[in-house]
Length: 488
Image (cartoon, rainbow, N blue to C red; front, side, top):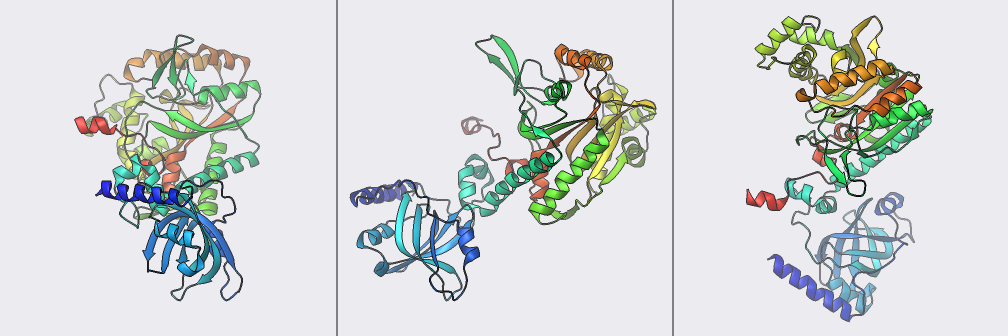
């Protein structure tokens, strides 16, 4: 079947060439966006014209007239091709159109008796002949696997998918504009790093041939951004890809987009304010309001968001305090968590993740969980009156962690000791293989007190666009190679 369709389109391609028409067109910059045409149309006003270009997505041949729909990035509208309104050559061309062809039409603009605003074409221009058919479903490509593997077909046939990716771009742009209004500057830091750090994660390893050295794809830009604070750049942010050689599921992709920012003379309270502003304002300005649907629930992004202490939540939902390690270990055993040969703080956090994160996932408001156990936060300043507490928050919405922030540690001696503890604990978690001596040296030159924030862009987009899988907000998610799937 596919072969016959392709053969038929190839034959039309040759006939088009015989007419002296270039089937792959060229520059065409007189077209107006479809969405703009539809918005400016005024009923019963004479002399309205339109010139639009896009892909043919519906085609009905009625003999001496054809009705079709054209779709561009801004929308979809109807056009009509009539034998008595086109030249003989153009009418022949009209007869060789197929779904998926990219064309331009120019003519009078009127509403039909059925209510559709329509371009009554007086000129038809072929811009690209499509040799492969569009997916059969006019209302959108439904097969999930194909949508991810062939994103071009998804965008071509699913206007809601295209709209979500356009919305993603607008949200990120809005983040940038809000940060610039706060006097932040956007910077770029290395993706290839000789020492990876800034998070507890497994890196991707690569090799630079000319320098004959091992390099890592970054798991975080944190330590480089902090170097900029040392150098005197007081408000910096970066939006870019991070890479973690770990699992894949509906909330994790090995290649993902993060925004990290650092502000001198601030703390984690300021980072909470910035997080609220970025996300609440984006929800209101771009997505239609601060109360948005997510699955079968509604998330309320109105400010201020809930703030709750880590230990208070642990007591409330697990019935134990992190200040009582024996009770926490007993709770861990009750939950089936292996607690032997693990530090107390690690066990505490595993209990927290198992019980508390599940509980707050049911809340329809974002929650800032503040004041984490210091032992699991090696880059965070301790609370002045209780050094067992780190001035850190994680923000959770609908069961997803979307942001992580610290009042940053800037004491070089404490930082060096924390790094050494990480190195000693390497067997328990792939966090660091080599001490980042240069970062410690930078701290010795003096880093101002600061607040730092990381926001998972992909997860925020999921929440603001009511999308349940990260693969639906990443244009080209990582998938198992098709050849490998076929051999397994």
